[in-house]
Image (cartoon, rainbow, N blue to C red):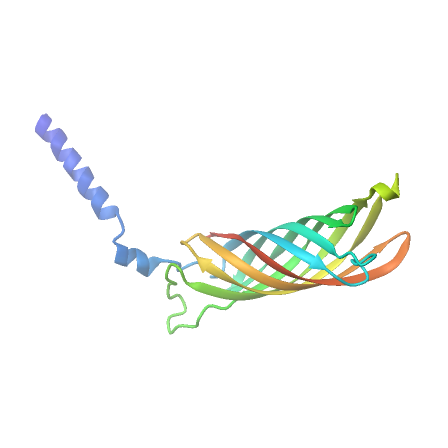
Length: 210
């Protein structure tokens, strides 16, 4: 009985060892599916910006903004992802403060090097550059001690163009750095539509669902 139990344990040990991927084999399999048709990419980034233009500068005071930007996209073909971007922002300008919520479509093109084998793996630590374009619909609310009971409300759009790079950490994780230019248009019931622009540097984490 004891000999039988030892035999079973030995067999389980052999199966376990054989099942562990060899480093070389794991490297060959690494990242075969990210960026391929049917995979998903979800990202969460933080950004800080300083904005100019008639929409944002008042009495010489520029507007500063801290944002959280979650997004989710589906790869419709190799390297091309289509999805939705969202934003949650806190904004300040002098004694004024605002909160903004936004959502809209985004398209991203990931520029993987074209190998002879289109499904060739990417090594851990590889850099994958990308470009993106998006349109977000924005709703903002603001207040200030000098306004008393008055609450500022506006709606508008953000048109963005960006370029960035992913640093692949594993099969499912990457960190990214991105620079983007945004053109904004806002309107409210008490004023004509105004425009503004800003350049943003953001960083965050991307997750792949294969």
